[in-house]
Image (cartoon, rainbow, N blue to C red; front, side):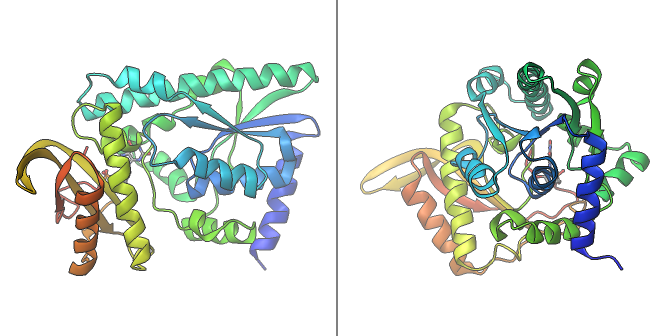
Length: 327
Ligand code: XMP
C-alpha cells in the first residue's frame, strides 16, 4: 500500500542510486512549494552534494530572498547559494515596456546567471574529484502531461524554465523526483519532510516576478512601490484568515497618474490595482468576493503607507477573457 513515508524511502533510494556515491546535483529554487520540496528531498538523499541556487533577479517581493534563504538554508538545512544579480536584471529591463520582452529578458538572464553559477560549483567539485552530473527539476505530473500534449501558450508561459542550453553545454541529465505527483501530494510530502505551513501553502508566483506586475517600465522606484503595496495586501489577507481561500493574490502598479487631495494640497500620483482569484487549475479563474471591510483596511493602509500612491482599485475581471496577471 502506498504511503507518503514509503514514497519518500523509495524516492531517496532511487536518487542515491542514480546519482551514485560521488555525483553532484544542481537545481534552481524560488521559494515556491515545488522547487522547495524537490530540494528538501535531494538534501535528504545526498546532503550537501545537492547545490541549490537562488537567483535574486531584483523583481522578487519584499525581503523575499532573505525569507527564502531563512527557510531553505537555516530551517531545512539545504546547501543553498543566493546569487544577487538584481542589478544585471534591472539594467537590462531599462526602457522595456512590452510584456513578452520583459519575460524574454528575465528568462534569458536567469539562464545565463544560473549557468555561470553552476559552472563555478562544478569547478569547485572537480577540485575534490567530483562533478555536477544532474540538474534537479521540480516537475509535477500535470507538467509532464502538459509538455507532452499541449504546445499552446503555456510554451511561452514556461519559457523561462527552459534550461535546454544548460543540459547541452554542461551535458547535464535531468532528475525529476516529483514527476509522478500532483500538487496536493507535493504539499503532503512537504509536510512529512518538516516544511512549514507558510511555504507549503504559498500562492504561485510567476518567474518574471513583479516585472509583469509593474505595467510599463520597470524601475527601482516602481519596484519599491509595488513591493510595499503587495506586502500590505498579503499581510491583511492573512490577518483576515483568507489566504488559503484565495488561490492567488497580488498588487500591481498601473502606469497612470490620478488626482487626489491630501490636507489642503492636490496630489498627482499612481494607482495600485489589487487582484485576487479563486481557481483550481489556473486556466479559468473567478475574482474573489472580498468582504468590504477587508478591502477598506487594505486600501487605507496602502494609500497611507505607500508613498507615490493615492488610489487603490479592485480588479473584478474573470479569466477568461482576462488573465490572472495583468501582463
Ligand atoms: P495567466 O496570467 O496566464 O497566469 O492567467 C496563469 C498562472 O501562470 C502564472 N504565470 C507565469 N508563471 N512565468 C511563470 O512562471 C510566466 O511568465 C507566467 N505568466 C503567468 C500566473 O502567475 C498564474 O499563476
